[in-house]
Amino acid sequence: GGSLVYDPTRNSCVLAIGNPISLWTWDGSAWSLLSGNGPAAPTSNSFRVSFDPATSRLIVHGGSNTNNVWVPATWAFDASGWTMLPTPATFSSNGPNLAWDGIGMLRMGAATLLSEGVWRLEGSVWRQLPFDYPTLRSASPAPAMASAPTRPGLLLFGGSTSYTTQLNDTWIF
Image (cartoon, rainbow, N blue to C red; front, top):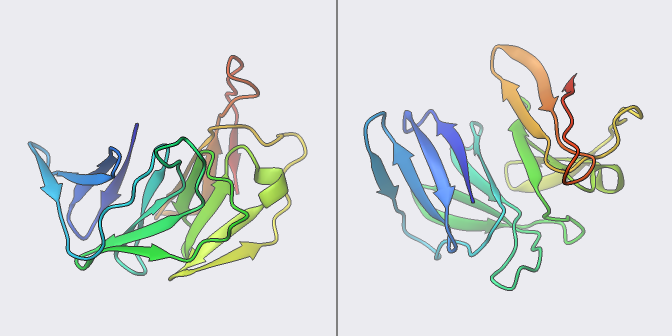
């Protein structure tokens, strides 16, 4: 699978896909491979990509290696190419969500939110935040999360209680 994000510095959508990860831009009419110098692209499956406006970098986080072992890893991509960022070893990489909150890149581990909590990537440093997750909503795999530049807070939607029961709830934080 892949992950898609809008990159305002390139004025295009960026698709992160494949193993190893390749980045493709969409300008409204055609796809173009985005390349850079530096280390090789990370090898991962089931990752997320987001844009960090404070650093003007694409952030790729989470996923599994070629042996389907979850790997807590964070990579940044800019004009210089790929840079691996320090990531807490305690992170589960199972479907993390990323969204900009006006200060940094928020991370909610989809399946392990109650045990891991909420973390923010500020530049190149992950910091755990105090967060009281609503008791009415247990941690559910694969919710969608986004921020909007015109409105403070984050929007969390859906997920599932199992692979067969989909949630249809909306939370604003």
